[in-house]
Image 1 (cartoon, rainbow, N blue to C red):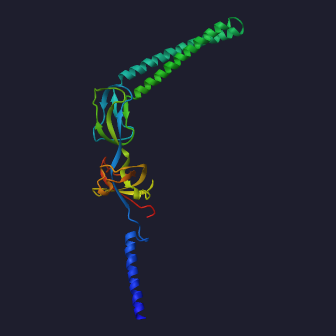
Image 2: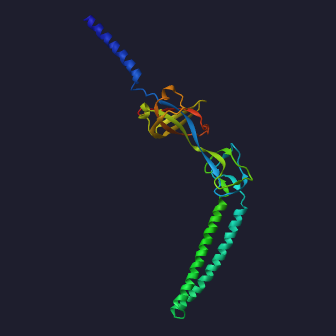
Image 3: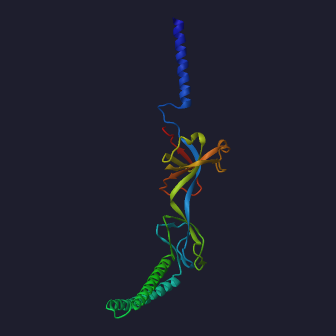
Length: 278
C-alpha cells in the first residue's frame, strides 16, 4: 500500500512538471500570447510641387526645412503676362456681348414682320443665323476668359497639405515649362511603416490590427495594420535577420500615429503586433 502511494505521488510530480514545461513552451491559456515582432522602415509620402502653366518664377517663398501649412503659397510666377491675357479676353467678351445684343434686335424685328407677311421667311432665317453666330462668339469669348482666369490662379503654388519642405529645386528668375518641379514637400500624414511578415505568422495578422512601433531612441508610437500584400516575395535586402533572408514573406503597411512629428523617412523601427486572439 505504501509503495503504491509513493508510486502515485511520483507520477503526480512528474505529471505536474511535464505540464508546466508544456505550458511554458506553448504559453499558458491564462497569459496573453507574446506579440509578433517584425522590423521595418518609416515611409513618408512626398509631393513634387510645380506650376500647371509655364512662366518665369517671381518668388519662391520657402526654404528647405520650413514647415508649411495647408493652402500656404509656396512659389509665385510673374503674373503680368497672365493679367494681360485676362484683360484681353475681358475686352473681347465685352465686344462679343455688344455684337450679340446688336444681332438680337434685327432678328426680333424680322420675326415680327414675317408673321404679318411683310418680309420673307428667308430674310428672317438670315437674321436668326446672324444672331446665333453672335451668341456663339460670345460663348467662346466667355470660355476663353474663364481659362485665362484659371491660368492666372495657377501662377501660385499652394501646399496641398501640412508638411516640411524637403528640397528647394528652382530659384526666382528661372523660366519653367508647365509641370516642372519647384520644390518637394514631405507630408505630415499619412505616415506608415513598410515591413514584412513570414508565412507562418501571416494568418495571425489582419487589417486594422493594433500595433506598437518602437524607434531605436526609445520612442513609442501607436498604429494599426493598413495593408497586407496578397503576393509573396523574397525578403528584401534591407531585412537583416538571417532566418528571413531566404524565406518568402508578405509586405505589410502599418499606419502610424505621429503626433510629435518624430518619425522620419527611412527610420528603422521595431513593430510589435498583438497576436490575433491573444
